[in-house]
Amino acid sequence: MTENTFSRRPGRRKFRPSSFTPSGGQDESGAGNRTWIWAPPSEDGDWETFYTDGLMGLPGEETGDLSVPENLQRFREEGKWAASAGRLRCFLDQVQPGDTIYVRQGPREITGRGIVSGDYRFLPAQDDAPHTRNVTWTHRGHWPWTAPSPLPPQSLASADHRRAAFGELETRMGIVSLTFPDSPVQPAPFTLTEALRDLFLPGGRFEELLEIWQRKKNLILQGPPGVGKTHIAQRLAYALLGRKDPQRLEQVQFHQAYDYAYFVEGYQPTEAGGFSLQPGIFRTFCARAASHPNQPHVFIIDEINRGNVAAIFGELLSLIEAGHRGRKHALPLAVSHTPFHIPENVHLLGLMNTADRSLIGLDRALRRRFAFATLAPAFSHPEFASFLQKRQIPLSLISHIRSCIAELNAEICRAPLLGEGAQIGHSFFIPESEVEDPDEWYRHIVIHELLPLLETYWPGEPEHLATLRQQLLNMPSSPAAESIHLHDDTGP
Image (tube, rainbow, N blue to C red; front, side):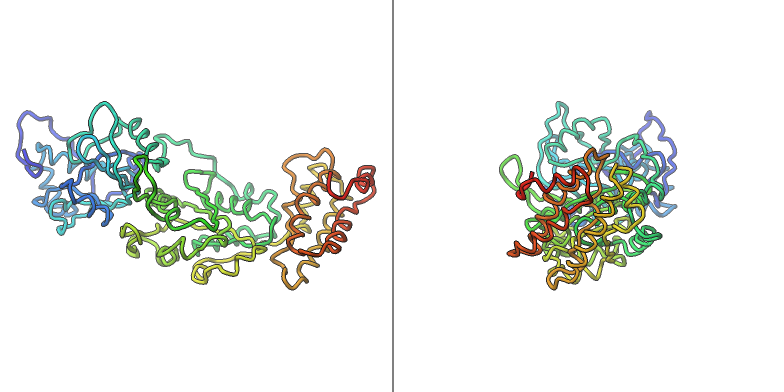
């Protein structure tokens, strides 16, 4: 019996009515977490076309568009017994956005992997497979199927019972599964009170940053070293997500060797000694976000100004703009030519050290697409002193830190080649736990963290650095403080 036959076969169990409506969408039962094996209609060349178009499809042109109620009703009544109709019903009723699709070639080879990202559409131009769904293809290549039983011969088959085998396959593919656990334990809600704890931000500033980020979708936190950019970014991310959910949060760090292949897509070496086109981390993340369109997802880029941003983002520079999100703004990727878009629920958060001279070269096109927020040292914030007191730092030393660093930052701001962006941040003096010896704790920070940084600010000026060292280490009198001056100036 051919794939397109709808002949009635007596004796078969009657198909139970379905609640499918072509507008579809992921329901609350978790149907968007299934795994499927799909074979293109013609295994020789059609897969390349489906990959390029971001589609998967099944045959059955004679049914017409099943999003039309009359066609759907006729299909339900006339196609009850055909095996091909059963697969098409499955495609309509059970395949949902968020499902994982594996492409098979024959019984022993997988040639692709993707995440369903759209509802049912009838495309007459797809002659041999007009019943389609959009898929964000994440992988294309050749991977042998090593499980004892071969892959099923059908054009579409459930693979839920083979998840262990596909987990092993994904390990060989060098990826982490994009699908959520079957029964995820939802993290506890992340409240605003929890977000504001020990942040040392002015009143209302956190809420303002969150509102700007939600509106613009892209935000860069910039500031001197040690102002808590990473810490605040994490709190903002959790506040936007509404909970501490690592499934919806990704973080990378740009550097000079980072490129388009790592971020978007590129050819990577395979175990067989060749190369295959693989998606980058951001494309993979967008596929994950597209499979859960009603949940915000956060992508954090640390040291965003240290990479060649124009080369890393490529054509994505236009797609990250808030007004250019969604499928209608899709552009072909540079390597695979696959249409790609950034989902509406993706929020980008960049971190930038303003003391880094490389920020001068930050792409102006990128600057236009991000909102910028500057973070400043918070030594004068009332909670800074109370936090240190809880860590057993005496008030006299807290006062010394505040006054000395304030004078140092004022000098840094006056320096022509430094300025406000090179100030010393309060995070240098935030201990993770109670401090047993406050004076020694402070001394180690000055000698091993601050002075090496100041040497880059005033290179070739040993006398000035010696003066700064003396000012910083001239702490309030205490037995421990007086003993500090007995140490050799080279360190402990």
